[in-house]
Image (tube, rainbow, N blue to C red; front, side, top):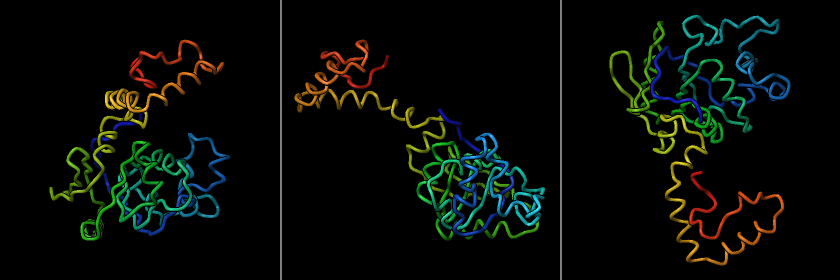
Length: 234
């Protein structure tokens, strides 16, 4: 299971930089030397802190209206670079629940969804319209509504966004990859039953391997009459 996402409302913090890579979000040395529970405290270290360790007042998430903001507005190719899940964990620990950008690094995008963060990639025109809202002096309070697949502006105007239906369901229900698989048990069992008829020699090989494998406990070995191998509801 992972954390559910249905709706989040809060100030939208503009970090309008392109090509923010995962090493900027969390340097590789911290992935090894820093306890996981403290990833958020060193996120964006290079631009968040001065050389003397004090906070950089020019970094948007250090400013009072945006400190702890649940919504981050980014540029193009956000989360590019190496495929490190700690980058997503660090953002989550900072309080960020949704990231809106022109585009994302592919693996980072997937890691967000697996960890309960909502990445939203907007086409150029909706993205530019959203950026126009942020050009005032006061912070803009947005609502990201996953049930409606919409970003709601303070005046009630909406910007729709797209998300794969299965990924949307997983976020709404707080399902990890195993949880999503378990939703398809009936389909998996039906496929296996048909496959046993079409390719019986495959299943005979599986039974034989299991029966000769001392590492497979007897109680876990699949019986020939079980149509739902290898998954069961037990």
